[in-house]
Amino acid sequence: MAIPDTKNRTAAIIPNYNGAKFLRPCLDALLAQEPSLPDIIVVDNCSTDDSVEIVKNEYPGVHLIAMETNAGFAKAVNRGIRACGHEYVALVNNDTEVWPGWLAALERFLDENQDAAACAPKVIFHTGENRLDSAGDAITPYGFVYKIGHFEIDEGRYDSVREVFAVSAVATIYRRCMFDDVGFFEEEFFAYYEDVDLCFRARLVGKKFYYNPAAVTFHHYSATSGSKMKLGTEEVYIHLTGTWIKNVPRRMFIRHFPSILLFHSVIFAAVATARLRTKARLPRVPVFRLLRTMLRKRKTVQAAATATTAELEKIMSPVSVWQALGTRFMKSIGRS
Image (tube, rainbow, N blue to C red; front, side, top):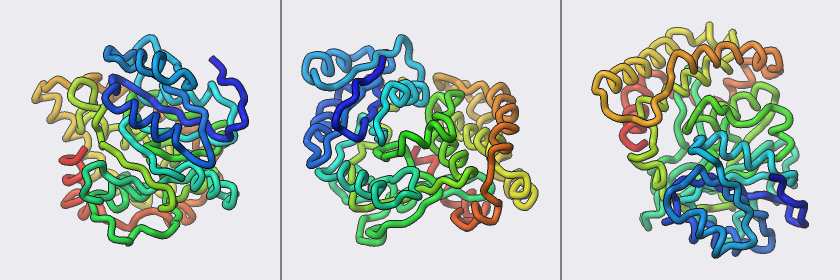
């Protein structure tokens, strides 16, 4: 399926799985954008609720791509990206509601900052407490990833534009050409951390990412990745190990080897503990097949890399592995 060319510069892609409860406010907010309006693509992952009927019957101007199975986040958004030829691509979670002017602010930022491959908005929890979900993503050299400002009260600390190492795919705008340059989202990851992997690959070839608080969105946070679909916390953290196997430069690996070994050993232990509990976690991550695949892909990724370890570490987070394991990592597990 190819989306016809229109005067709109941005295609907004919404991956959806049983998100009927949130689709209407999400779509209504996108359709109310002024002065810029996106072409909207809903990629439905074989929902069993009323999602498809809502789009077909109530939103005739929205393009619908119906997947034959629940193929996961990465495959769904990749399908949508390949279907459009727009200048910009916005990835929008189905449990978000973008504020008026969100798209105009993001398009304007990319227009004025040609070095930006993508730009993330300020994301606020849809709880009425004015708490931040994220102001961009931070990454450490050994593999810990966290959302900047996560769960903090929005009191102005994150009201300025800043460069960030990575951006979450919650309601972020990307240059379409970036995907042609570095590839698409990692389809070996069913869900979670495929956006981190993409940004790391892009960083390796000199791409930059930014956070712009002029664009704002509300987020219900994991509302549509509940117990029936959501990968277990312990399962998805192995995607971080896969990301580091594929992307971390050799010099960085040697320099931070003790921290890398400790951090990813904790991840393996968490996965093993989850398996011993035999708690149902669907779909289960095929750990060793995943890691072998990432190791195989590493050669291609590293061969294309142009950024130095010093350039990458300059924008990485200084949080130590002990800080991560002692506070941030454990708290993020509880909030996933």
